[in-house]
Image 1 (tube, rainbow, N blue to C red):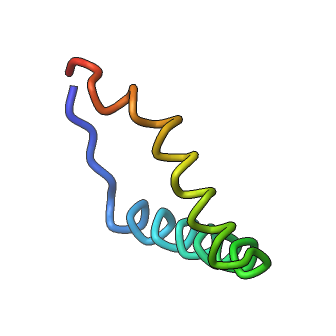
Image 2 (tube, one colour):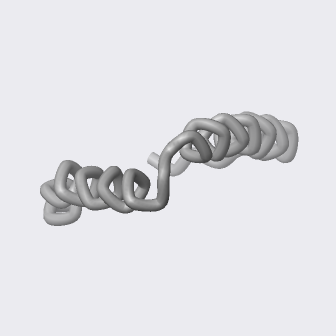
Length: 55
């Protein structure tokens, strides 16, 4: 099944993602560089199994 967004749907998705990124930046700004590096390493470890899923 192929699903496509309308122009309005793309605009809404872009707005939602922009807001999400703003919140993410605010949260990460509270962490030190070392803490951000540690978080990134942990997230890579957690998500690594999904890289090998079929399909």
